[in-house]
Image (cartoon, rainbow, N blue to C red; front, side, top):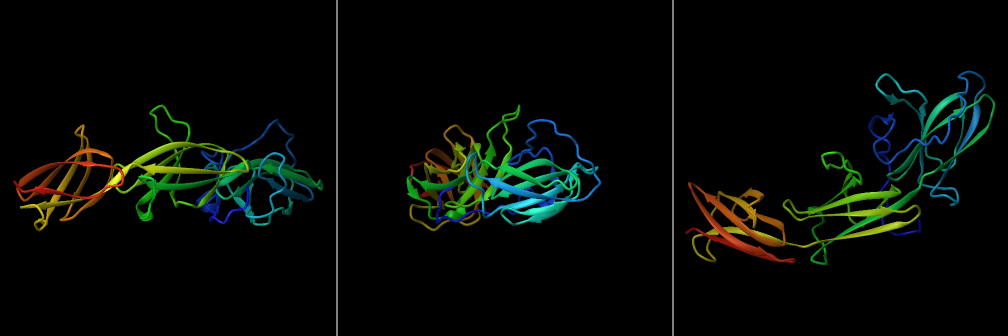
Length: 298
């Protein structure tokens, strides 16, 4: 990938907690075994194995930001593979006893797992083509940069859906402007701004060796609610609020004298419960709004 001043998200959480590997992984890692290989013996003199990673086919060897993990070649009774060692060298050479191993190379959130065989006294060079690219997410509100990034949430899902139409969540808690290193492929991005219905989704394609910029615009506005006896009057405390869209679907429930929510552009109804009585109002949200909606106690 070309050099950039944007922050890069590290891959310390690959392959997962406990430094154990489960095959086949559900996302981001794959076991490539193009054809059956002879099984080496499990005895004899160790042999040096050199590990080399490539960003994409035909690229030069990767020389930084790589983590290698070497696992036993056979899974335990729990289906997990025991971690033997972790290496942070870009192109390490390590002596391994004869036998089979699983090698995982991680570059940010991009990673690749492959099985290798080690033969007695036979030096080996093992190449790994990670096929990684970068993804940089940004968001705007009515085409203006989002200032309250603490209200913004990005999630990345698998492109494929199960029989119920659900996608597997791959990553969450992502920050705008940070470059994520990911395996090449198609990903489904969901951006949520606020705690209500300002939710935008899109698909992106990550290509090996390239950075993909995905900008998401939220067509939404900020609305603050206030229950008053007269226009401009003092807000009634201990009020419960229920917001519905034009179709009558429940959007959000909250409580307080001045609750605020980011709502997608559209038509809404609101019910304010104060004591034993309930009051209603209607309002419209336009993209970029920052408005006060007063509901009269009448």
